[in-house]
Length: 85
Image 1 (cartoon, helix red, strand yellow):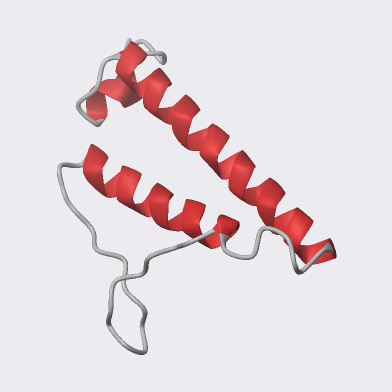
Image 2 (image 1 turned 120 degrees about the vertical axis):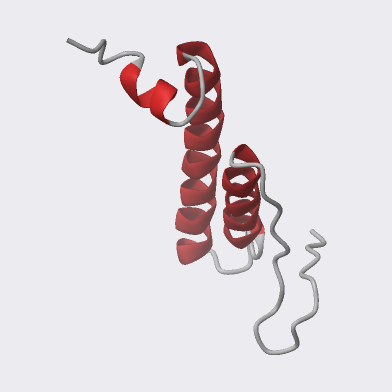
């Protein structure tokens, strides 16, 4: 019988501790992005690009965890997105 604490981490090539650290960091960034989006919903002048920037960071983190790179671009201009807050 496989150990439920190590089966999934092993399936993605990580130890339990590596998976824990990545998932915790990823989850906290998700919470921060969600909070920024919620604040922005009520106060449109606050956190204007924060949630989008965090989402792009999460995409890059996920790609990097698989040994890939990702370049986030504006769909209309195909130019890299740079956020300035």
